[in-house]
Amino acid sequence: MKYAGSCLCGAVTFEIVGEFEDFYLCHCGRCRKDTGSAHAANLFSSTAELRWLSGQEECKTFNFRGEGHIKSFCINCGSALPNIQMDGTLLVVPAGSIDSDINIKPHGHIYCANKANWDNELEKAPRFDELPNG
Image (cartoon, rainbow, N blue to C red; front, side, top):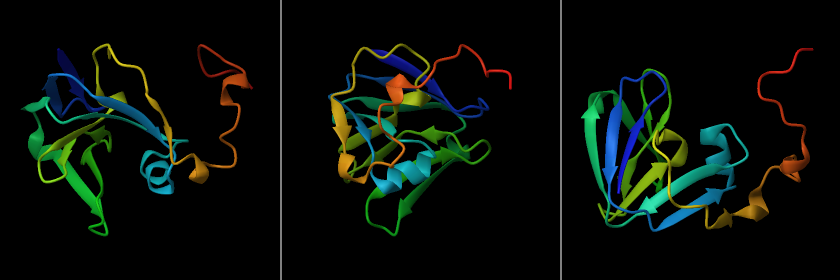
């Protein structure tokens, strides 16, 4: 499989060649902070290859307190980007950075004990195709 990806501003483009073994939605406090959302949505692979097509120099990697909570992002627009972890053995790809269809569904929600108090029954919230007026 080959997946195309990019940041919001388009300065960074990449492709992933291979398969993802895991897909998790993480509700830990660190993932909520670095996404600004209810959870992170990350794909994991121990075999796929990350190929930078443009803008690799625009990518910065942050390792929170050196503890292994790692996030890569575009220095121009802040979009989350893939990174290599676990001494080069694990590719972590934010699902939202992939422009192609993804052929794997999330395997589950993790760190649910840490989820935000407003993160309950979100599927029941009204749905709009665009920003509603007023």
